[in-house]
Amino acid sequence: MDSPAADIQDDAPVSFYCEMCQVWHTDGYDTAIALCDYCGRPLCPTFDYACTNCGRFACDSDCQACQEEDCAVIICFICVASHLAIHHPMESAA
Image (tube, rainbow, N blue to C red; front, side, top):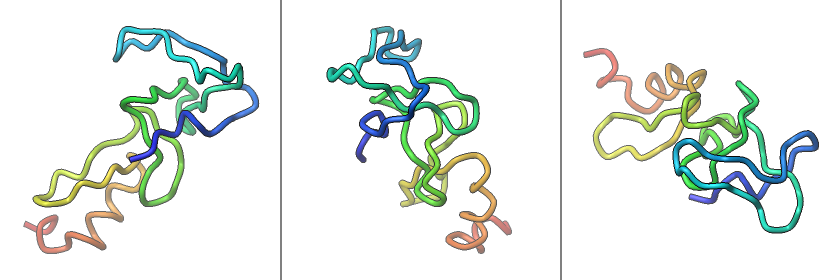
């Protein structure tokens, strides 16, 4: 999956210390790093992705991987219910 850190938001920082990786992240071009659309936290280029359902950028705290068998999508917390209803109706009903 491509990292959202390549996408630029106007008020995002050029670099930040990532608690998850325990390193300083920078995009290397002196331009801003993307922010989470929900909490505003700078995105980690290693662990944070855009929601595969709605496309919003979400940090690791505001998204999750689908837990159903053989499903590897990353979805934001808002899209979890609709993803399960559409793609896993039998599993989520159990």
